[in-house]
Length: 305
Image (cartoon, rainbow, N blue to C red; front, side, top):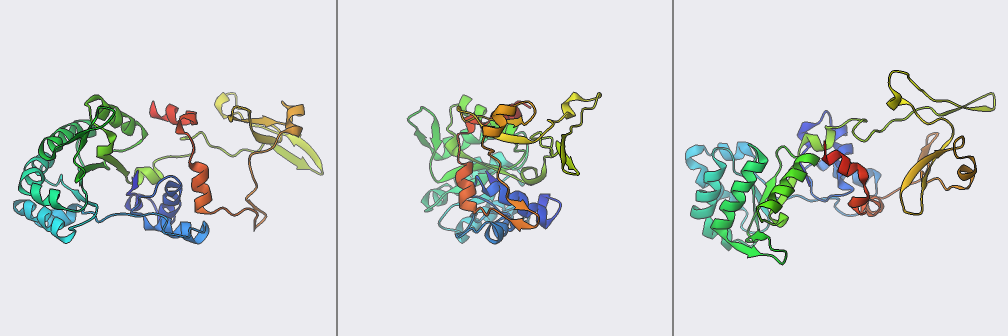
């Protein structure tokens, strides 16, 4: 998943925080502010992420419709090696892939020491990708991998960066499998939605008061509105614990008295009373994030919505 989100968020700070969160699991980004934050606050020793030369619509349409072929040819000549990405839907994505990339510039693409990544950026992704995969396979050839899926020649790939979210990724991958192509043919990107199209309800995240001490006397507290039971919170002192099957649950000193005292709290105090108590590097966080995604129940829930 490549991050295109800088221009689609509310501020520089928003882009930096969201992009750095994205970098815990991915290495491709065009949002440089996230790399700066990772270096300044998370001790990133090396370059936190990377990108490739990529065109955008203004650099393509400035050549005009009549010189679309020349625009693409110039792009190949400027970058004769390496992976590059070219947006190709300024006029007719199907004509661009079939007749310009696939015929007029075919030999130049195949002679490159690197990969041309073609970017569609409009239309229904399912319809567009199905048609493009078939066009590019017909024009550039490819192989059938060990699992029986078609892989386009290594000189050509597609990036889908329009309308991408958890649900559409799921739909796109299912489509690609159904029509007999490998997901190796495709990479994903996302814009502002990746960094900012969510709120605290996306992951059911909330911070609520559960325990108070007044004059040295502790008391469990909780909100329990009659109009919305879903907003009730757990009362008492809480711990997040890990069970023997590596699943997590929250217990309180009220409902789990014996278990509470013996249980190890998985939450660690990082910042308290103006002091940083724990410092984590980007590399450490990435290692923590490198887990089996099938264990994340919320991911499966989100894909169905």
